[in-house]
Length: 464
Image (cartoon, rainbow, N blue to C red; front, top):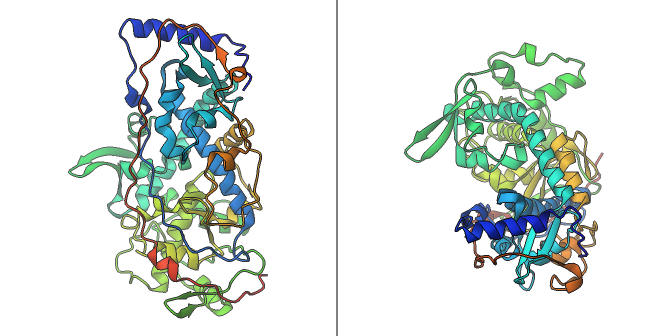
């Protein structure tokens, strides 16, 4: 990239960094230690093209690009003065899904509007945030602060839905970016709303525990939407003790989708008119009501589980989650062990994307084509980040679910060599750095998706 380094800032920071190192004040490499990634699900049998929602697969492609860029952005934010030796970022390779010969340096090189790269007098490569990226960092901090009260409400409502009214902090942390929780979630944010929840330490770790029950928050987002369509704008004012509900769920289907799946040789008509109507008419317990006494596998149990998943997805900024994050809460929210089967069964309510190394589930009613119907400010912020990447919007492989498109070339396209002298700004530095060795990350246990391999295609029906 042809960096002009107009602010003269990166060069000055390098000089200062050299002075600090000369005084023996080195930064800890642990600042760059990335959080362990969630599970990498085994590949699921490729769904038929008629069943795949191409628009939502395009959304997944965009989200993968942004998430990878944000990994690097977050790592640089943690560094003093937002600058670090480029080779130190190689520890992020597993999180970025980069395989040899691709390097993090190549990845950074592809987004010159976000990242600046310089070489000092000792030949050491350095990476820092561009002026545009610095502005985005400041904007994100402001938006997270503005969203903090809403995020606190959603976390409180998760506690209200859970068994025992408490959840492990480690599990809530999986939702940090999805729900717009701040970066200091574990250290500071959990103590900012003592009237809503408190941090308690048990034998197996830290938990967030509900402090007070708010009946107005025990009304599901689905109830509010149905009331709004009926012209009732005061759904919360009618809140009482959560109990039985009998509300249909909005369903969206692509043209000519498959009407049933086969599991172990038996056909299950999950979108057959009669079965769908029966499911929609079935009464179910509110996600905020006690679920004790429900029979696992019954239609009432399954519909309540659908309501719980609908509510959790409604709390997220993009109405989308990695399925691993939902499966980690099966016990706390009384959801079925075969949760993936339920998500696929209720295909019109949810859409499971098999693209990439990890599966994602969408709340279909929240999308119009490739766009969210309602966009939170933090979602629009992500769109700004995407605009500054080198992503060219390639989607020629959208129809191939087994192709993860996680490689550097697929994400940004084109070639490029970070070693080209034309692309690097040479600056003076008083000292070189200690370089981090390449790191590797271990994966958590893989989610059990073995039963999904028994699914086969069914016959197509015309959607209304």
